[in-house]
Image (cartoon, rainbow, N blue to C red; front, side):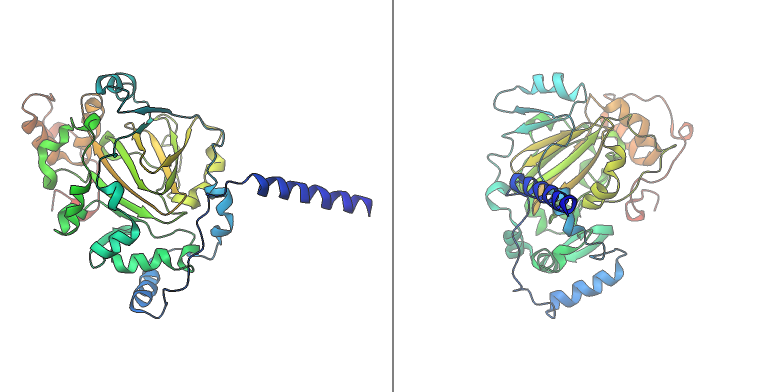
Length: 364
């Protein structure tokens, strides 16, 4: 009996210590049941869920939210935090962009209308009837997505639907108005791919939104591009690994996204060098080219991100771009008018495969 009592006491002390120290803001509040599942939105969502392969809530990952979403640094290195108000662009380029070192940048969106306007409710009011791309390249009317993220049953999904749209500015004049709510930061406005124009260049900007547990899978950005990612609403957790961390030829990397990756995959890689970053609203993360990264939303979050090519990563880009989008690459070289030199012709470069889905293929 004494051993049983001691065991119960130990369990109680462990439970008490964990719950006493857990951050109070890491888990979102419960949502009401005002969204009725037999409404039009609920019916459409159930039909959509039958089309998408997923465990939905059967794994009960939501029960592990404290583990997945708890906003503390877990053994990873911390990134530098800099400010556009205290550092010049030249210094940033020298210390971070040229050395391919990730960092958090403060004060970029201070004057953006998005910081005052964007919210899930604002999007419903202004863009509720508009279609946005979500998980697995499926388009969904925002009204239905709003129902999804607000209904308590859907919030239990293991792999939540993730709004991740690179076509919002091209496919719809109405959603194209979102471009007026932010601007490319000065530190990244020397984007050499911009000569192609928005229609001809490969996908390069995304509006991203989702509830807790939603997020990306482990990946590197296409064409050896670098990226800036500004969080407008919410909180997001990033894990970033240096370029030489994984070898895709010898390692099979999972496509598990967001919270699922943190449960199933992170334990395998947590001892490899990495940065573990909590991004707050109003902060911009600089992701250097070829860095592996994965994200999970800690709270309901909205972000805007763009990829770029400049002097610091153009040589990397030249290695990959022609393998993936050969015609566009040589068009780009011509438009750069000698600023980027490549003496090879198209026949000398082996064509790998198109980087995006068939609708983006330049060979159609």
